[in-house]
Length: 194
Image 1 (cartoon, rainbow, N blue to C red):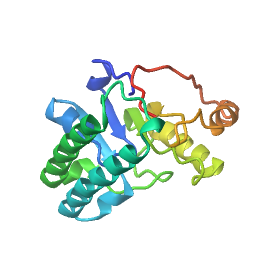
Image 2 (cartoon, helix red, strand yellow):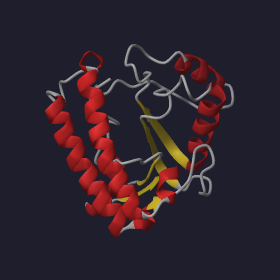
Image 3 (tube, rainbow, N blue to C red):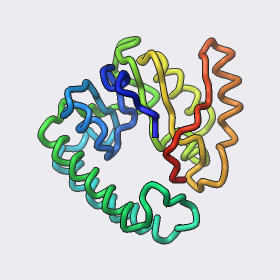
Image 4 (tube, rainbow, N blue to C red):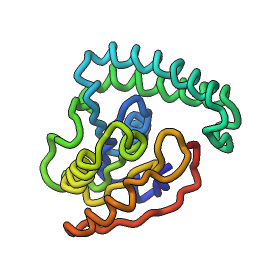
């Protein structure tokens, strides 16, 4: 979803928010250097792992009830989605328990890292996805904060969770953030689900 290259995998990466993604676990297992942040990591690691397993069931039920909101090229069907998400949750759950230091409890837009601590910051399924609940000020502050701690920031997707169209916030925020000196581009990627 982020068009990650082999060169990107050699970078210091922040997954922000990491949620239940297996990205940090997988990258570190393969010799990379990734850290994930999410407010939920304030819970004991075993509780986070249990919560993630329950989240897979909720997400699968939602996908089944809203089939027409998704493109099934990658997952093929809801069962494929459930299977892949279950495996990701298992990898994440095992890793958060075994290596809790990789998972830091922190909320956007207040990251506990020095300026440019990371080469790459990835933000998946938060900004723009919940633009009906997170206002433009939150989006702007979150992007500025991620740009403060990372040399490059990638955000995916740029659509509201309904998947209907690009969030109306995208063009407004791009203009605003360019005005304070941030450079931005929209890049198509091969992965598309919403």
